[in-house]
Amino acid sequence: MRRCRWLVGAALVVAAGLYLNRPEAEGGKNVTTRVFEMRTYYAHPGKMTALHARFRDHTCKLFEKHGMTNIGYWIPTDPKQAEEKLIYILAHPSKAAADKAWNDFRKDPDWNTARKASEVDGPLVAKVESVYLNPTDYSKIK
Image (tube, rainbow, N blue to C red; front, side, top):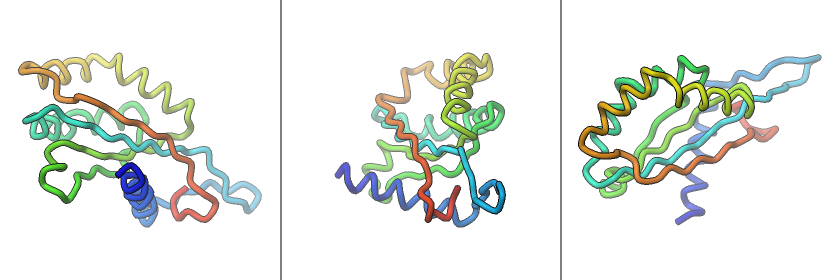
């Protein structure tokens, strides 16, 4: 199962690359420090609709505000898993930029207001997994 999740994540990164190929040119070489972050959220039972609403109405815009690039958001094709998991990929200019962006995001008053409002009936997320990824030299996305 874990191997399958990694393969799905890698496929999502490659698919995103089909429309986001943005390497920086330096002396004719493709150079990039950009990193990708694949996050998987495991929602508490019955909370996925509220989690989608929070992302749709607040979180995605706040990510952009803090310099994070929204690559894509996915749910599993299996209906039961779709009620439990939200998988998404962000791009950051660098790992240091990602760390700063997350720190600033967590302190953002708009985020804290949205989070508190969405959790009046209890927390939405039970568990978060985050993996930072570097594109390979043969990847279509940089």
